[in-house]
Length: 170
Image (cartoon, rainbow, N blue to C red; front, side, top):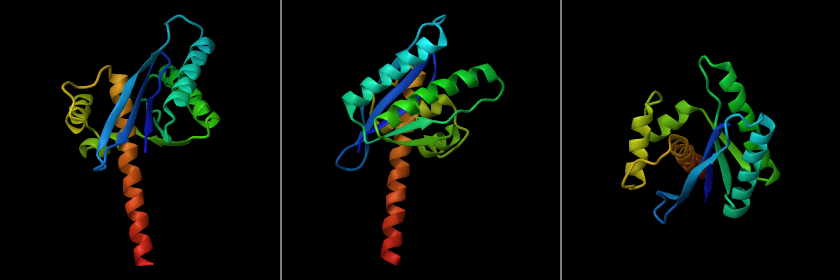
């Protein structure tokens, strides 16, 4: 199973392709970012994100997409623009017929480090250790996308175990 993890944003959208090795451990296949230029009209920025997403989906052929849910405390303007980027990502996934799974930041943190209020440094260090990387993945948006993809792999594995256990009990 290959999961495309996405951390949406209008300036920078992080992406990561994560699979599993023979032992079921997460394996980082590829990661990076899409960027748009500040000052570019929003419709053009969203079009760029959509084109990049659609091209990546065609090229990588993931089995599913995991997207970080929108979370904001104070800045409503930022939340609205990130919401627009999320919409474009969800559209590209729907056009490709892919299942989309959404995770709150606290769910991702809990899945990776066992603590829903973990900071970015803790998450990035855990990613480095889990994936046996020489350094923490950069930039932050790409690292967040890796974390979302791994969160989904763990969630899917857990759901499969629950289904198998339920079937055995029936």
